[in-house]
Image 1: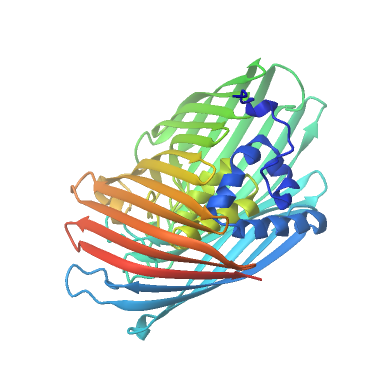
Image 2 (image 1 turned 90 degrees about the horizontal axis):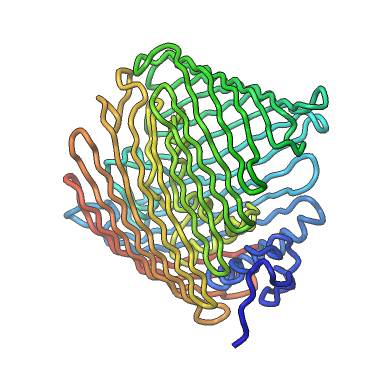
Length: 537
């Protein structure tokens, strides 16, 4: 038997890839050669349409990809009731538009869908849901002034301890639409031939329709440091930031944090960089440690090759310790990722430490190591959702809406094992959230000094039957517990799906779903049959 060459030594001819994929520099790299082809085969060749669109975008600068989805759901428990269960036929029509640009002064992507939900028996509950994911950057003044922007709209649970559900079309009073937008202009450049600078102002706002979890924040920052383009082993930097936050639940009162740090960076080896920093910060929170205090920390980055990276950092802050650990390792047919973060979240949707709320968001982050290009990654996630009977609005726990600044610790572990025809995806998460200012005006899950802990697991097994069809099974479990009043909920769901390519631009799937929700108040079970069709124009 011939020896298998290491992935780094293989020639970049990618013989397994389709011609459309071969032209992509992304998939000519090691990760694309080892990981992307099985994913395309398993999750559906619909992703290839996005690849072709990007081929055109690479030449023209812009791509526009419209499509429309039709989803029929037959459920035996529309109202998620433990008794008096009501069956319903739910129709969802979802036109969607994807725009992307990878050249020129404006780069980024926008993905927006509008879903009309019609109930056969309870027409008074008909609704419209939005889903948006957009990010971009613009060069306002050549090589000096820039603007970053991002926006999102998604369905989120109001309370982590309230009724949870897998399907976003099921009637649930514990769900609301949350919109967030961020705008960040900045300038950067070099001076004196030995240093570089960046001055930035960021504005962020979050609004929810049916809760008081609304927030506004402004961050002004200035960075001055040694020229990163130089080959010097020792670098230096000075950073200042001013953060102002305002939550609607707190009335007119807001809070500020000012932080000044100085740091030294040492390139110990080409693969290892070390950094130490120290400084002071002040805040006007009533607890803990109101006033000014010293802070210090360290970080390291280890990258022994293209397939492995490890970033570790830790800081002593006025609220305690913050840290960030990120690990990623790729093998010829598997990807392993782990992250562990603890920090302040000044966003009502918890976007500081654990900013993932829907299944789409969770998979979009998980597939980052597989498909760095956001447009191609979006296509892969959409194909995955279709292949498993899910939608972009399907909720995934692991986050919490807050009415004030919070301290969050968030841990994620995931890995994918990719065979020729079979793929196994597994992930687990655990997070804990507490109010930053326990004496302040905080309502909801974190009121009266309470803290909320969440953990969950997800397992998905997909098998390609033919080049155009696949079957998959998906199991998820989420457990939520309250520290102070000892409330707890547990949601388990199982979905089996058959998906196929029905035409050149038409994909379909058929799914069976069962969900069981255990709680002290309003436990329920639900069964559903789901049919999906999606047409790309």
